[in-house]
Amino acid sequence: MPLLPRVLAFVLAACAAVAQAFSHAEDAKSAPIGVFDSGLGGLTVLERLLDVDQADNATGLYGPDGVPDLARESFVYLGDQANMPYGDYSAEGKSDYLRELILKDAKFLLATNFYRSAEERVPGGRKRRVKIIVIACNTATAWGLADVRRHLESVGDGTKVVGVIEAGVRATLDQILGASAGGARKGVSPFAVGVMATPGTIASGAYARTIRAELAARGVTAEVPVLNQGCAGLADAVETGSPDADAIASSNLVALVERHRDSGSKVPIRAIILGCTHYPFVLGALNRTLAELRAKGAPLSEDFRFVDPAYYTAAECHRILRESGRLSATAQRDASMAFLSVANPELPAACLTADGQLTRAFKYGRSVGSDAVTTKPVPFTRARFGDEVFANIGRLLPRTAALLSRQP
Ligand code: DGL
Image (cartoon, rainbow, N blue to C red; front, side, top):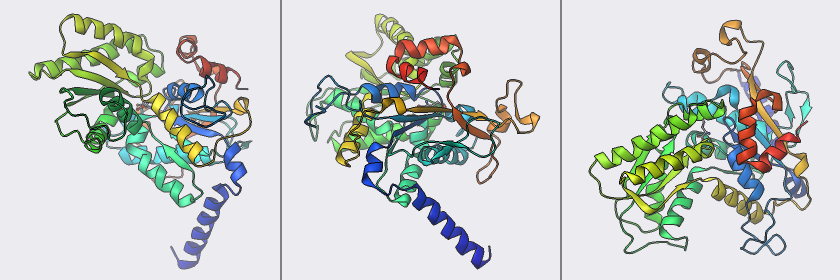
């Protein structure tokens, strides 16, 4: 590019970044909390953001007071449904494209406009920029947390990002080793930790790496086996309300436990991290299968538990907002908004399925660096879901269901 256009492009990019930043501390306090996932799984994290209670709201001191810590906050939720499953991109050799999608999700939450419908060509809706980003997706945390963090640093107004993986690992090790600082436990009997996650999250190695780092930070030198289970198809089955979801969850749990037993290890599994935000929806099936495995003498400790990173993630979000002086002072939960992405209906017919979604070949065939608008986040509408899926949300996530049903 010749020098002048290059300078202009730089100036424009700098202006865009400045326009995105908060100019007043008060704006940053009253702005919403941004949450994103590849689909509906992140709603399991939103539910914890709606009910986390670790502090006294009046004094700010640690300890629950019966009032949710984030009761005065509003939220912007994005489910990038048109581009999911995120967990399949790495196997398709498209991890870079996934990273681009994740950065786009974050930029959408930071933007102040949105497409009001799939047909709209220029985004005509207005929304507020978020003051913190919660990546409510393990796959997106594994592949994109560092990129989002770098982007926010380049904007430079103190907006932070929280992922689910560190939270999940800390939750697990706090429960096994105790939560006190340092946490080096002399005499802790040997244990193994399982991770059920998307194939993409497992392929990233993020959980195994974070577990090792966190064990080292706590002074645990003993070898802790990490049992990885990539659960192909499970997030998608949950998202679409497939009747196969429970069976897929159970067979993956059995596979993880039996592989450990077949290795000849006598070390009991003390926890399995639900390393995908869609999996709490199949916790019932997982608990039933666990009881069967236990009855057959599987190597599970007495105090075994499934760990959902969501609560720790919500607690971390609250802590960051409090420490950065960004907790909202006014009640505004009803100002929350939710968006789901859809395929751009103007794409050539060959890229779309009969029901208007991206074909698998097109979805995983795209490459980085294109300006083409292949999907658009549009306002969440109840009509997009089968009754079964929405009933599930209502059963498991009552606060979230109430918030969603107030969407226009
Ligand atoms: N819910 C996402 C996670 O936590 C993944 C689902 C997907 O594969 O898109 O990893």
